[in-house]
Length: 231
Image 1 (cartoon, helix red, strand yellow):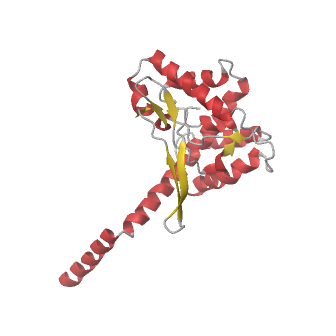
Image 2 (tube, helix red, strand yellow):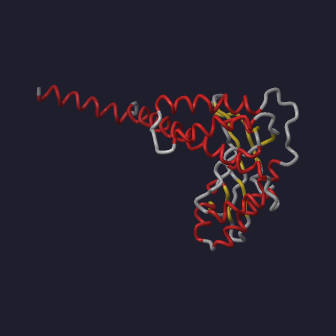
Image 3 (tube, rainbow, N blue to C red):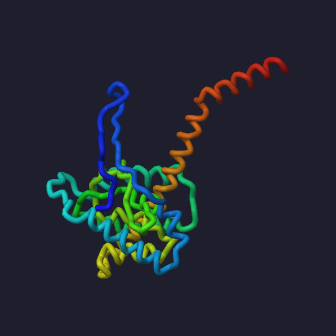
């Protein structure tokens, strides 16, 4: 597979952290290169990415999983869906999306589970001068790198339809099963809802970090001193 080779890994910072040193992949991120390509070339690169993704999933089935994919998936996703219902930002069509998820989530029962990338998108694909494709950033967080192989399509890059079509055709060798489309719709629906929760969480954490930074604390002290001087 066209992925970086692991050169070294170990423990650092007095045992508080771990590190992994990977081979450098020369080239540019596909999200910068693909938009400059003609549609037929986008499709061709998409086919290659789909073939690579299939290679990641092939021969990596985990047969001794103790829990069904449905349970593992919704252990992670359901709290985010509930968080959206309680605190999310409403948008047109959200109720229809939530209803679709509820009506189709049964499809995730008894799915094959294998090694997944977890963040397979144009930003994690590198294209070199020979237009060879490489996959980077394997530091997936959710599902511990194991799940339904089709969940790796949630970042398919629909903003570039030719690339996305090529990725699907390449993955399935131009024989896409009918059930894939409903599964893809389910995963994309979940992503549309949970992305809002994740973004809110990221912004909140960033605000807390900035508020607790030395600079912000100093500014707060200056503000309080100013109030005292002018009161």
